Image (cartoon, rainbow, N blue to C red; front, side, top):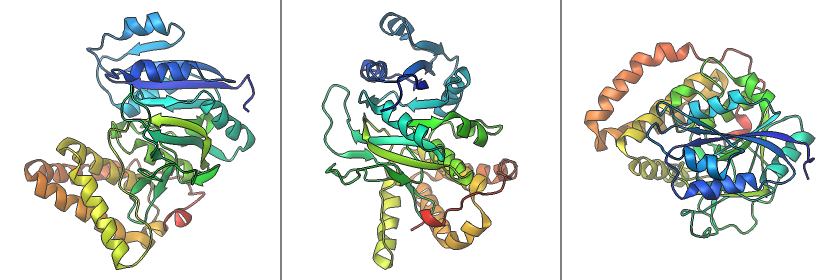
Length: 341
């Protein structure tokens, strides 16, 4: 187990958490064999939960925002307050088993090549109901069209993801990071890119950590439960025409499930992530797959919301020169070849 003196900063972005507040914060307080400081960043200016937090969790630091700046900036604000060698970023709708952080920090202590560790998250849609036994995420995988997928999502947990298992990255619903790695890959837009607001910011961070040579693992001994509001694309593996068609169908299902505003933001963040991180070498191996995904996403968006989509795409094009300025110039330590089946 992790040493009793392992120090961890815990950052919890809040936005109208409802019944999940007590469940999530109690599970954070119950973490064993770690010494932690907790920052709660409340992004709802109309919120009145500060008094309740002060009464029930007086040892947690509550910080109220004047505006909803988004998940990425809330994470960065919390990160800036701490100095511990490890940082747990946890969603407000996530419940952790008492040894979750201890297992994660133990892995980080034992292997300096790790930049991030996650646990096996199971699905729990309601804070007051038990988990349903299915997997929410066993890590983030990356596909040739640059679709990020949550490994095992929707599968019944039968122990098939016993760990530790190396993954492309970990989901920020409950991720423990090495602070020095985060500081190494941070730029003028923050550790989590604040331009993303929310959605895909953890994938972008995972990609930057990979580019810098850091590894990520998921260990099933660290277990948690998560009520996901927005799901990533369904995972489809294999080759050939059938698999290609299944991937198209997966993208269609994912895009049609989003509301218009989220669809626009997700596409913008996806393009920004590609501009920031894609290397010419990796692009040459996956160019047509990337074009196919972007084309399908655009056709669906136009069909569902032409009034919002077409001006949004034009606006995105006008921002591309500025986005190119944020492209990471440092040499790529590791490329994507191993992560693109």
